[in-house]
Length: 124
Length: 291
Image (cartoon, rainbow over all chains, first blue to last red; front, side):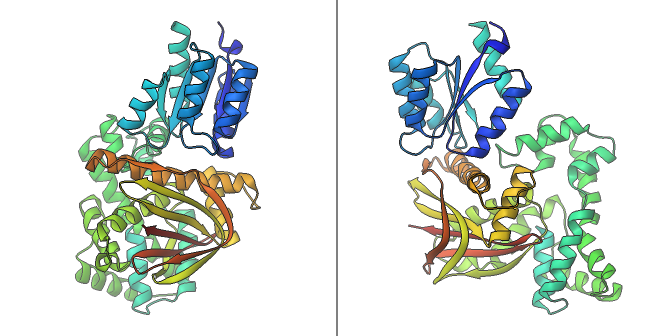
């Protein structure tokens, strides 16, 4: 798979975070980007679009990122969901990995982090 | 932090008034070099390395010099040298006051030596801890209930404001046992072993100013994007507070999603605090109430 063939679903209630992440993804050649602003939308948009990769905030209205992750993994066990949170604690990391997260990143997510995740995914 | 403490001393001792301090702080934003800029100027770090350290400060609560040493960009000795150079740059507040004609060189020299004698503070790395203690006293946090929580929370907030918005601000007031109002605010709650309600906001100008500086963009109105920017700064502050609590004390905290409020009236009891800061772009408030 080429980097330009990757599609990404960004799930974050912050418009600023979605904008900055979209800009970063655009710079590395990813243009197929979907955006969800809460956990419920995230699950719906995943089912509708089946993106290659998901970046998911944890603290979101309506449904938390962890609950959305659980539902997405039930629907598609092969889903690649990267959890991102400002609360980068051991507890959150363990919770995310237990629920099947592909990776856990502390926000704000940097370009290097995204590239590492994509390389990791392409190697699988 | 030295700038805020020395500015507070100058105001308290009626050496200058609030308008004069505000004008000098505004001028400082144009002339004060940051440690990264001084490191580049000294040839110790590349611009990319400086950017990398600034990026890292979004996720860890550490000083620029400490991170640069950890990453192998600077030696301890180089950091001390740069801090010494920056120490001189902190005198820019005094220089700006003199340049505006608000004080004379002699008044500045006298004030500085009196301030150092009273507080034993001179700027620099070794004084960071003492500056923070002085800050806690200036804000009256040392005498309030739950002073450890409020001291840690407010000091982290002040460090984050200096990192992400700039240090061109002075303390315009500390309130307790009152209802504080904010025209625009972002609110969030910490839950878990510690529960607290927090709001960051202020006047319309202040609110837009926070967002514009945090996003590094030219923003002019209080639309959804501006609100998201302020909300994300508050989220970053609370995320770092939760990470520190988990790493240092084994206390696990969770955050609620941020909400945006207009014409917020927040009741600040005796065991809560609201700090008003006057930035060159406008007035902002931080309100914290531990449950």
